Length: 116
Image 1 (cartoon, rainbow, N blue to C red):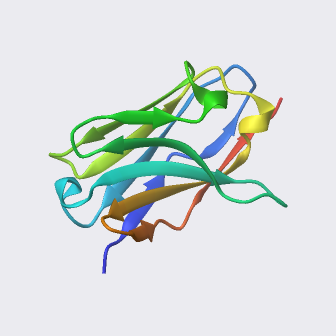
Image 2: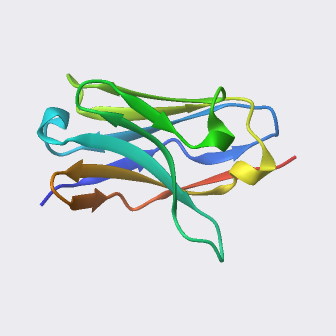
């Protein structure tokens, strides 16, 4: 069973930065993509950023230019660097690993709160 363990969440002031980490129990290259999603109360889980096995990245419009997704294959870890954070970034952030054609694995989630 694939395990994904997130860390790095917490409380940050508007304009501040956080870095989330997701450690996978299997080699990152065994997945087609890794990514981050988030969910706020009353809303569906939404994609934040993904990175494919060959390094292609994708971001939701609201985080472009502020968030950066990256990976370390040597450490089996994917990261989400979040800068210039806004109150609307407050959510539970989930790590995702995807194998084709359609198998998703999820972490337990980590709370991120942006507030003064």
